[in-house]
Length: 354
Image (cartoon, rainbow, N blue to C red; front, side, top):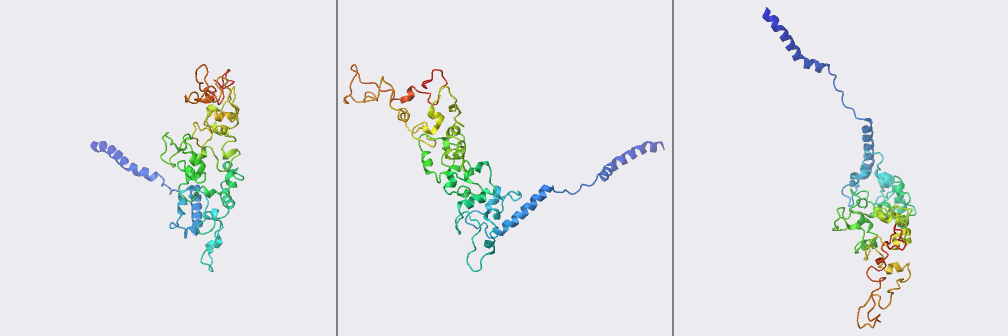
């Protein structure tokens, strides 16, 4: 009897421990089936409706097209769960006659909006542009009307590839290819001795082709959609655009050089030159465009401007010596003395000597 009294409490404790997980599981409320957030449901409905609208077009315009059509779903324009993205009809119009067809003709009627000339003639540049500006209105495109590109009869799809997975003009590696399609002169300038690093990769290595340059691209200086400044520059003036990178030339200086404060292109050509650094001409000829003639009376220009060249040249001698080269024309010419051409902060730098 005493043995049973000793064993019984241990048996009760063991039984409770064995039943406890089951009791806890029974007491735990059953998990409810997971419900989708309202935003997810709305996105699914948006995508379902957009794809249904697209299906009116993609039943014919499929992967067999010579130009990419379905690849638009690899771009931002193809994110159908986003209510802001357009459908086919948003850009090309409802095109009800085109969808219904014409039994009396072998060809379907023209869609409302045609961007690229293929089977049908493209709409006017203004019509195509307005279709894009329906959504793409903002500060970067606020100056499109009246800009050089708009005045030249260009439309958005002349540069942009909406259906392509990668829009070349928006890719830094390939942007210049698109710009140089029209701007042949700037493409030629890039092959000159002194250029901006449009053909240099981010690592500083010379690019192997016109596709690899990423250190500077056209859009770093220009806004192709229009600008209040000259030459479609992103800034209001040429000086402001240049000093975005060339900050050491910005000033203000104690002694200014007027052509520098007016316009950098008075002396420089931005896309390329055979005279370093990007100069329009060599000194002293570049300086002479503003500063008329030499002013160094010790060695004036004349027959001996470059000094003694040929003993049979008949040059007059001074004290039995042939004339020395003019410091205004030899070496670095004017810059031999006037080294601080962009401006000077020296109290004695009135003539840009130091």
